[in-house]
Length: 255
Ligand SMILES: [Zn+2]
Ligand SMILES: [Zn+2]
Image (cartoon, rainbow, N blue to C red; front, side):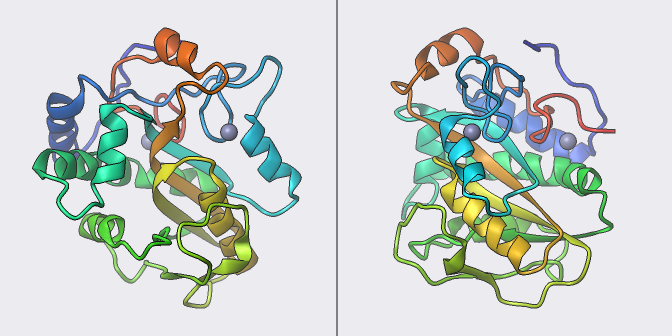
């Protein structure tokens, strides 16, 4: 398991946010681990011996729908932990400044530091971005990402026509509000991944609508500590937070 720091040059602005995030939340945040044989190739949770995917991601793949081409995660957020508090409460009415700035820092490092990593991995020249809309009409994620975006003309708005709070694999309730340019890549941003059904439904709908590839970037992989081998994974494998680690590889950025 890697624990050495990743070295790559980041812009001074990204480095400043990364260092501030480390000072503020480094004591409890834990970086995502990508390791074949240990964690799911899609969602980075522990897998059964000999498996490549966790049961949920395996189920999505068996549905036979187009899914995200790649997924990136920044931190784990096991239920009941401070990390979970950040990712669940930042969108509440009064989250408090520490929670807001920690969530904004996670998104800033991921988006400003590794936007080009997903574009490079796609091999497509044209990258657009979108936020997974809240099924409860909350705008917190959207407004945080808007503040970090360099180009609003590259934004794709997504509409949702399903029920509130629904989490099943169903692309039919999501649609882009604009026509999709040919041979383009979409970076789809979400705050949390619980089963992955929501993000994969949106990704699937975007591919069906014409995007050649969809990369899903998620701030936090939510975990249930009591499920399967999650608790021993949390105790034995999670290492301290390294803001420089690439959300797409769990290691150094791709070349
Ligand atoms: Zn998985
Ligand atoms: Zn990267």
